[in-house]
Image 1 (tube, rainbow, N blue to C red):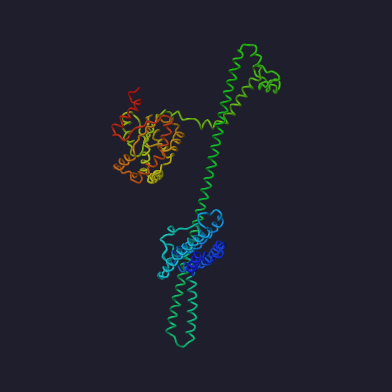
Image 2 (cartoon, rainbow, N blue to C red):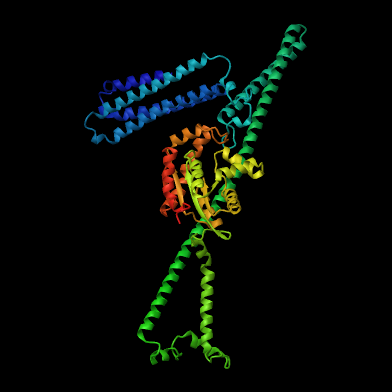
Length: 562
């Protein structure tokens, strides 16, 4: 019916100049009015179509109704767009010069009628497809259906703790079926009572009883399915509440950390200001003392006069001595001398209390002391498989260093079977970096037990946090950093060619280790490179050639170098 209306409207729009040839000025208003009427009729039809789509959905054809729902709204959208374009043509009528207003309006009507007709044909094609479907609704084949539940609840989706769209459609379908089955049960009960009142119909009565029993079984089955869906929804809501609580807790922690970081930054800025202010005051006092020395010699009468307090001058010693009771004087007969010294001590103590923490924070590690002995530490860094261990063995043999491999120390701790070793093994399998405190503790114990004072630390520090923790805890700054530079392809080839039985030598973990090295360890190399402490070695060359470069760097540490 609506398609016939569209065809008739398009035909009238095309022939309107011949129908209203007597009043040509009335053609544009008539066309616009007709289009508005068509828009209203299309809206009425759309409500009917949406109602039909809802009925299809309640019958269990969820996927089909989703497609049909959007198609049912397209004709109204098309007619509304055509009406808007016609109104724009009427508004801009004085500026239209290419074609007449009447012709433009008719073109718009034909285009919108054609598009709406195409959408209606598509809608009718889907309706025909729906009529040819089998009797089993597609909602019963859904992954979210209670008839085919998934293996675990974790595999199902949830949206903000509520039922998903498919689950809601399934629930509506089950309720609709229960309503239909309830009506069928009532009908069968009426038939049963009718047959019971009659003498004949025992066969029909048995059939009705069996149908009634089957209907009640179906109702119980649908009830159990609805209960299962409700329980699933409750579990979704509980899980959603738990996740929201976790999110709120982590948000609070993040806000607390941000405030702490901001306070730390403010204290650092205030510290720098105080240090700059103190340096300026010290410089000013030094200049003042120099000017006084230049103006008068120590033996001149002018200097002797100025060292005595004068009335009217702002002099700390004279003001304090004037407030002392009589008789309280120093053994030398000058009470202001002791008070002057007391003033300097008080000023110094106040300054030290104010800036002691700041000076401790900006103090640079330079003593390199471990217990009672001064040690020489060289960090050996490089990607996994760059040959650090081989070259460290050569350095130990030729230059008398003690080789401390962070990886070897960690693996030894793993083999010990301790709780700490189990934690380290799990982190290595996941490709993560072991906490700094664990590695530093192992390194310190190894250095203290060793009788040597020269150490090669291999594979540590691996990030900025490792580096800062090592220098802060041990108070040791490395003599230099030996960096073995090698391409990832060469390192991967070397690692896959190994046969050492290491648990962390598989292709997945190797690539994770490469990624961790690039993201973390290179920052340590850049830090020491800014201090001119990085000695770079091309590790892609053969082992003897690499060691020749290493020997040139370690020449000052040779036994006969002294």
